[in-house]
Structure formats: structure tokens, C-alpha cells
Amino acid sequence: MILQEIYDFLDKISPFELQEKWDNSGLIVGDMRRDVSQIVVALDIDEEMIESTKEETLFVVHHPLIFGKMRQLDFSKYPSNLLEKMILKKQSLIALHTNFDQTHLNKYVFEKVLGFKLESQNAFVCTTRGKWHYKELLVLLKEKLNLSTLKVVGKKENITSIALITGAGASLMDEVEADCFLTGDIKYHDAMKAMSEDLMMVDIGHYESEKFFAQVILDELKVLPLLAIISNSKNPFHIETL
Image (tube, rainbow, N blue to C red; front, side):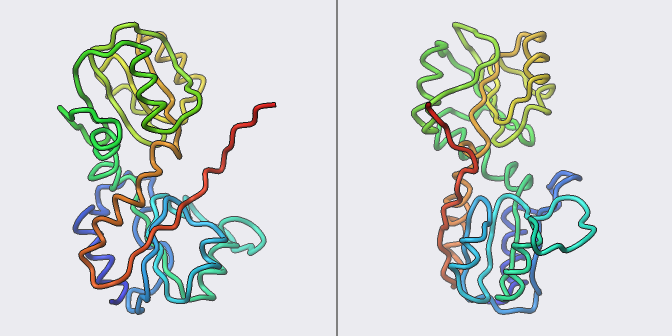
């Protein structure tokens, strides 16, 4: 298959036009006329992944390698160092980020991973209603997302509604209508705002809530007549217990 055919397929299942204005989903590296030898899917791309895969590989990732304007290509610095290696191996890169959050990832984590019944989805925000006790919910989140610790803003012993945005979704808290909001990368001032508005928030991690991307997109790619495999991205953070 050529890159254009795969791009068109991805655009059909998760239209790139849905991405946020600040996002950079779509083709990052490549030539639409070039043949693709295999597809590797991952949350992020890294040096080890590039070096261990063959020429003409297409990487389909969640996080775009390039954000904003690039003013120079200094191959000793990120992300230019990765771009150089990919170009030399005639490799390609497509990112499905905020468009895929809306069409696939948030719903998958909400329903398939955490086991909630999706009652409504407004762009990024998945919401359900029910009855959960504070400790019961935290135990569920730690177990399903393999979290050793949780950062919590506010505390509600009895929770009747839950909302979720994978990745870093705290900036969208004004669109959340729920007792408890699950998302990652909660900043200090977001936490202060949530407390003042009586919104309980639980930081479920950026990597931890999005690591399912590779499996979700792999399931979609199985219909193509081309080998697609998962390469497990590494969490850039680790927990130290001294």
C-alpha cells in the first residue's frame, strides 16, 4: 500500500478535521506517494523504536512529534534528532491526536477499561450517572489503570455522576457536569478552581489514561492488507520510593 491509501483510511475512521486548532494531527513525516512496508502503532515515537524498525515503516502514533512552529533543524536536539533518523530510513509518521480522542479513545477507556456505561459524550467529555462511594471509585481506578497512587482534588463520599477526558483535560472542566472529573496532568491552579466550584477531580495520569491508544488503532487497522504491530511506548515518568 502507498501512504496516501493508509492516510485516507485513517481520515475516514477518525477525520483529521475534528482536531483542535492547536493540534498537529495528520501527516508529520513522509511522502504520500511512497510505499509502506509495515505499520507500527504506538502512543509516542522514540529513538529505540525508529532504530529497531526497517525502512519504509509507517508509524501511527497518538502524540504528534511536531507541535507549533519549527524554526531550525538542530539534529542534536528533540524532535529534530528523531526526524533525521526517520528521514534517513525513509520512514513515515502520522498522528491521530485530538480527533481520535473524540472518535475512539475517550469512549474506549470509559467503557472498555473502566467499565462505565456511557450516557453522553460531548466532544471529549464522556459522562455517566450512578452511585459510587469515594473509596470504591479510587480502588477501581487504581486497579483498572494500574496506578500505585492517585492525586485527588476534593472529596465526596457519595458520587452520583462521573466524567472523563483522557490525557490532559483539566482546561475543559467548565464543560463538565458531574460530581467527579477524571483526567490527567491536573495543575495546581486547575485544582484550586475545582475546589472553589465543588468539583472533585482525580488525576489518572496522562500516559496511564492514553496507553490504550495502540490497541484501539491496531484493531481498526486489521482490515488493511498490510502487517500492523504494536510497539509499547515508555512512560517518561517513574515513581521513586526512597
